Image (cartoon, rainbow, N blue to C red; front, side, top):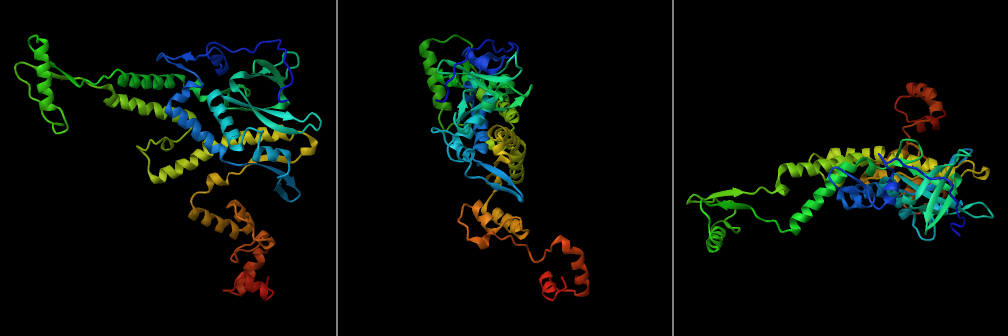
Length: 425
């Protein structure tokens, strides 16, 4: 069974009340009340469109990249497709989860709760990892045993509390102050999120209550109900409708017209909304153009920002995952030399023209063979001849550089191949 050991917890996991951990917030079914009066939790923060978009964008960026297993060889490295860990990461982490969903959910847990936890189920006979299970981040906490000084993990599933050892859990924290517990963007940005949530409620209430009055007419004397209806009707006839839009209203008899400014149309209201979107984007490290904020975007800087997103936002997470998965999955002597690596090619592929130029460059330098290029494009290889690495005839082996320069000086105009054919190289 997945969890077959009951836990007797002798000590309590603690959290401060000044800046409580997300698990403590969720335990009591609410969040820290912000100055706007709104309570923010990991779950209800997703009701804010900017948060939902940021979390989904970051999670998709990681989930679409294949996680592959490699092993070192005397000449370099090679893919290890037959290892059990490779099958878990590339085919099925567990019977109920696809690799994409597995990676996507881990990233969601990181961004909303601050830390993601994965339980490695071992075969009791062979000791090999046979499944990877996502643990609920709001019900899993690292706990330092006061007697041994070692960390264990306390988690609760189906009203059963259990203890897992450090060697059984893959821990992936977001920004951390102690190297163990992660601090999520939601915890950091509670005040900004509170303002955004309050704004959303205000807008909803505005439309729900049907507040649509554009202005009032002030009269020098009191009017009866019949006179008010007649004045309202005549005003609508003279100034209402599409044909009268943008016209000039005329009032007489001492009457005054006063416009009621709608906060939804105020420049300050709109600016505040855009400012809050930008603040959330900064905290999640997501470029604004990915959130459809294109006020200052151009084609050239969008391309540059997209590359920055890969290098500065996605890449650090990939490195964290690679290091933790490699250490936890391959900790036995029989797995020495193996490690996990993301295939980043799909993130950097670009359009077909850019890929063609890139492949031309790397094959000309001998870095990739034809079959390796075809593998990147998910095409069948062309046979053993496609495994050969070739170089541009205008390039030469560095060990022959000096000899080539002397031969070229004596035989100007000849290519390296021609010099080799006549025995000068």
